[in-house]
Image (cartoon, rainbow, N blue to C red; front, side, top):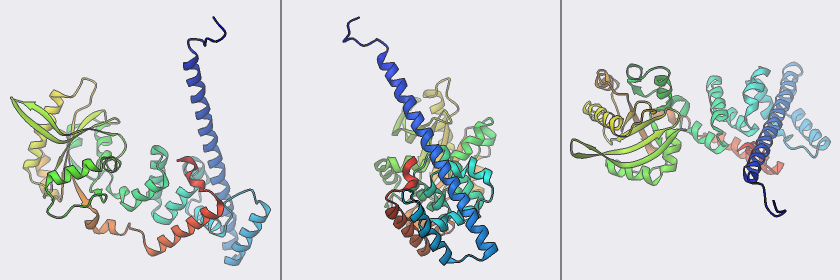
Length: 354
């Protein structure tokens, strides 16, 4: 072999080495983040204890911040605002094991966002698991919180328990949301179904983000041939975690019982025409403007195909339970303080893992 010729497997070897290096970089960054979050938690615990036992006030915290910044000029994150976050962090999570196994796995400023915007401990823990699982950036996390995702996940009316085997039925139930938040659309009250469909296509990235992880867009007005006639599916997706096709039928009116019969037909057709032996049963989602729970339950009772009924909300018509998730003046002021901290520190520690 000439000196200028590379071994035949060189490219594959190079790729493997690059993947190992990237993997090591990610593991190192995660380890640094865990240590940083644990350090902040320990400092917060000490501050909290002294405030409770010795009555430390705001002046002591300001003095501590100044002295730490002087002692460790090369380290960032010792501003007064960040010390107060450390205290709040320690108060919210008294269990050190939880810090090691969960909260320490996400960036620091993700934790600060959760402290600001989520008051319920169980809801906060749920968002932490979602961040770990899906790698959300802080901006996506904020959007998910403000849209009330925790309260919308897995609550759609479906017949999955009767039509899908376990654990497929549980996973499919968790995939659906109600209502879906289309706050990225600007549609009037008189918008028709095709208007809604076209708007979603124009904003397909935002629509996929709202649908959740795992959805892949197959097509709109997707044609299928049944009995010599052509029918068109409003929107067709494939879900890679469920391993199945998902048919979405868009309605700009209140749910009507005949919608489930039409969807049952579509799902049966996709099962016969598109589904492969390795795919799970196709799922149908009827997406309506409004719905009556009793009508939906009757409409789905004897349907033998897996169908879910959800609603959607536009930005101007968010339901009351979600209105409270919009940022308050106090939350906006807190976010401004965070931005000032980030400018002071020269970098956003939380965005290192995005």
